[in-house]
Length: 275
Image 1: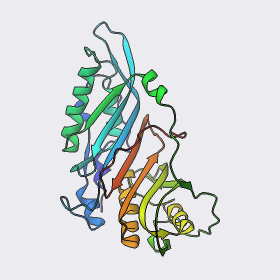
Image 2: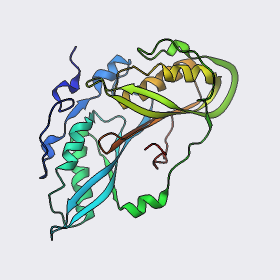
Image 3: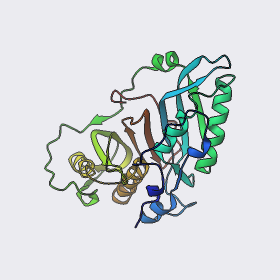
Image 4: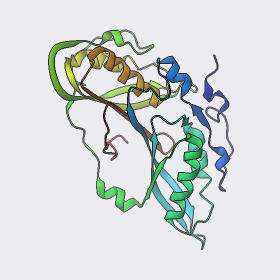
């Protein structure tokens, strides 16, 4: 079956458009992947946000002087559509030779266009480089599991049967930098860090690491990988609390960071060292 993104500019040669062109944005409905995961709109077992950070944002002042900035876009996890990443980049580049009065005008424009494409309100922050630099690089909470010894033989698809847990109830945070998945359209690699915060039966850390590594040749978009992990852990642990998120390495000046949680959250969106 054809992937919904096959009609997008992803994986195709594209002309560089340097004048404002909102029609470049390409929505991909979430419904098909939700159905694949056994989910329905309006009945999602999580809440969350997809945080996109743009490091190649630029426009012109009314006098023609270029401005550079960093953009943060928060797309609700229950929005009808995700925004295809190449179309997102092409759209942002269309601002490059377009004049705007000030940063506030750019923010309002981005919020309007991205909300229309996603089908839900998208929060936008446009900030100067000094402001973002002052935040520094984030360090993750919890325990890194990457030094655990595991044996992996199958990388073709995610393998939830690898996951194990004990009866003891704990509250902890585990993370791994070994997440890699592939774009379902181009096959290009997506590199990231996966974080699991939960309260419930103790998750066997080595089994979690083997499970993370099993995504190495798995083909899905960033958002759908995180949703798959969330659902697999929810089925195994039946936790009192669960949050799963991934901080993906930027590609084309954009990084994508999906968060899924059983509870309301206020994530730290500072970049990690690889981002």
